[in-house]
Image (tube, rainbow, N blue to C red):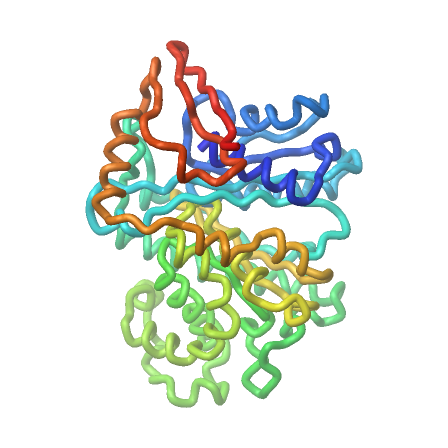
Length: 410
């Protein structure tokens, strides 16, 4: 994880010509732990040594796939607080998502996103518009510190995710209503409107686009449909719902979580909305698999890369973040500036095109190599660095005191 985070942060600083001395806070969201005490953030401080800037707040935030979002919230709160010293914050969110052999392994992936947070940004978080749901659940967890693989209760985890979608959406809607007087009524109706017809007056239609935490992209489509199901329960007499079976209105909540009629009905009703508003956000999750803490922000990367800057102008983006255990939030941002530079610097499609295709057996062999290397000291990694992109940090040694050494691919 150190090499991925170092590579990502150094790329951000380089591409945008960011002076490390201009950063006053750096926080990392990850669940890929290499040390039970030393933070990933402290490792990243190597990138600040030449500037002489060691006055940088923040450490790591941990709760499954939610740590990146909590780091974002902390950084926004810092910029808005009396502690802010006028400098910018950076959040690094990423993980290596590994599963033991079985059905879950193909959903795994790896990735990391670094974000600069400060005033006058082209993507502006909407103050106050946030809903959170946190509760105790053993749906996905990592109690065995000798293994990288999680313990997963798959069906229960899907249920937990759906419950979190419902609860966060309700909390966000309630908050939007409470904020409406300060926002001249704009919190309730669509941001700038992908849809403008009679059926655009749902709470769901306040979001011009949405990005979800994406364990699988199928779950994303089901979750977006679930939001419209919540709108149906609030206003079942709306003309859009004329063909919805009336018995769906009276389902017990627990039954609705797994009811196939609910799922099929609202997947159908949201098909067009999903294609316009959510599909552009799932390119990275589709092509890279689950990135845990980086997943939902990979969705944001996809949106910025796939929707023209002029089209994005003035639009509201809804974000749903989920981490097992569990912690979740729904929040929103407005596109208030030009995203052209972001899209250009991200260069997403060409970076995806530059990947190598290998057989599944090669991936399994790589997983075996990681298993053998796990918790090892006096260790020299094996394998070629020829396929690494220039600027990539890579591990060269773990010494007898477990100290890790890295080099940069020229």
